[in-house]
Length: 147
Image (cartoon, rainbow, N blue to C red; front, side, top):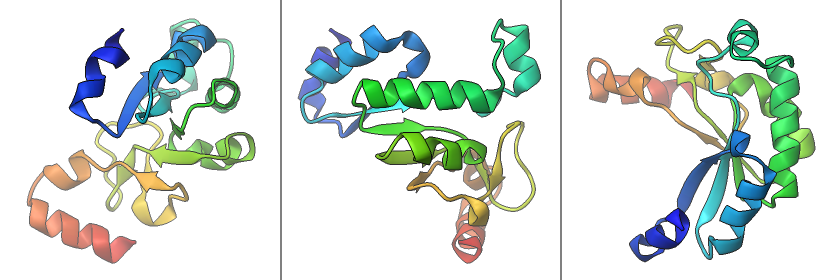
């Protein structure tokens, strides 16, 4: 019902956490119409230790691989994963891959699985704090030079 309520906004992409489960993913995809549904895998702020603390027995890489399989089964349009899982995901999920946790230079702003922009091999990158902290103009110039 949330997706149906958003359709009039003519949005292009909508994210949904893959951890919501296969049934939920399929249901969202079924009613999405022209909206591309993007599955969000394990957050870049989490590492193996964090996963264990919250009750997961898999490593980040194994969990993200499993989540990619769920996204594929649900026929999602894109998947979000950290730069470290792009190669694993690409073997399973053949559609768009979006990567947050992208940094300009060495500073990662608290993300545990982040990487410099020039090393990221996904289709799309998400850059937030690396651009908005400090001089946006200078940060964008640094980003362009780093790509």
